[in-house]
Amino acid sequence: MSHPFSLCHTIKSARVYADHYNANMDLTRRAENRLKDSPNQRKTPRYVSIKTFILSIILTVLLTGIIIFGFNYFFQQYNKDEKISENAQKLSEVYEILASDFYQKQDKEQLLDEAIYGMTKSLKDPYTEYLSKEKTASFHEDVSGDFVGIGAELQQKGKQIIITSPMQDSPAEKAGLKPRDELIAIDGKSIKGKTLDAIIPKIRGKKGTEVKLTVKRNGEEKELTVTRDTIHVKSVKYEKHGNVGVFKINKFQEGTAGELKSAIQQAQKSGIKNIVLDLRNNPGGLLDEAVKMANIFLDQDETVVQLEKGDQKESIKTPNAPLEGVKDLKVSILLNEGSASASEVFAGALHDHKVAKIYGEKSFGKGIVQTTREFEDGSLLKFTEMKWLTPNGHYIHGKGIQPDTPVKGADYENISVIPTKTTYHQGQEDKHVKSIKIGLKALGYDVGTIDEHYNAQLTIAVKQFQQKNDLTANGMFNKETNGVFTERLVEKASSEDLMLEQTLKKVEE
Image 1: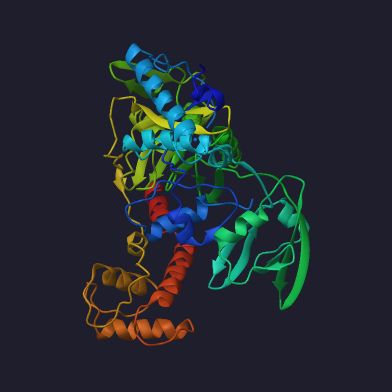
Image 2: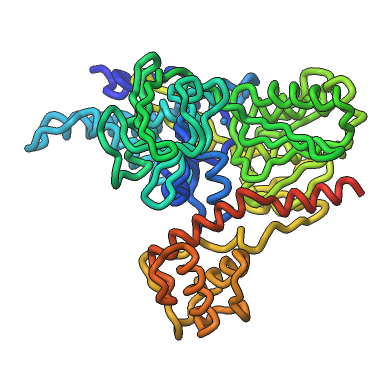
């Protein structure tokens, strides 16, 4: 009798990566209400902060890591012993009994999937999970940076869906979509009252197909036909700040090392000698890209990371010489609590080899590595297989990497998002009241003492905020006020970067 698991779940490929990612979690994506069109969901934090919202602006879903790791891990082999075979046979028999003899007809594929889900959940490891065919496709899109869409960023402002930024040379730009266009219909059907989560799937589709978008621009309606195409989202952005080159690295996807190398060469041509590698809110991604990136700065045959499983250990070293002229650069790395996994591998390697100085905040602290096994039916198993250490043997899991020079961001970026189910009013005492005060103060309102008391001064400030934003001015912090309050803070955070400004001052000293 054939083993039922070999019929539709034959292993197709195996991959290794270091990423702070969980495909079943998308709280920050929903809360942020600013979407592009490629799935990039991540492990949900203990609370959603304004800083998390800012992270989502860069790394959410685009309208618009997992490559096979190029190293031969001696411990990546199956260790099938007799007990495992016995247990597999038992599981097979239970599956066959329930699939054929249960009194109600069962979906055999769902029955098998639920059994696998159960096994992964029993491990109580947030990084181990079984992904359906659909989620696996989204997973691959995220790590490759390629997906099929129209290439435009959308933002929900109240009840309006606004096109904020068509990507350069994208189908959206070629079709004539412009920033600040209000989207009002898709394929002739009104989107009134729809959320971004409901709208995105209607805009995305197969390559070469068309979607008709009706937008309102300067009071006039226009219908534009956009042909969907493959969009590549770059993971590295270079900006020159005075005499310093800043490289914002959003994630470690296929080609990130090449993007960074090209950007650094561009900076070198303009005479830049001082660079900042900004890894804030970078959740990680492909481990081999982190190794390639480290090799831009490190000499040949230098250890980038140590991988450990039980009593087995392997050092991954740089295969090539560094980028020409890189030794003449002063290198700084900027981290925060959202910098995780492959970001920490890269930062740890450059720091241990005394190539870079670290600024910012303590990093997330994810010192474990996941392997993926993809099956013939398109589903995928992702599981934690090993831990990693820095070249000097530091295990940062749960600890993070401490900066050489701490740099704080704005206080309001660290407040938790206020729960929408509660209406806050004068006389209450609550930890979220303190967050309201910090946020309103950042927006320019006089809230008095920053504490947990909802006093008369705060009531006045809330009324002023409500009046300015055309809300019912009753002085109570309700759901509607909460939503606009969060929008304003996200807008403020998107328009300023106090941590980077302070870091630039310090690196130029």
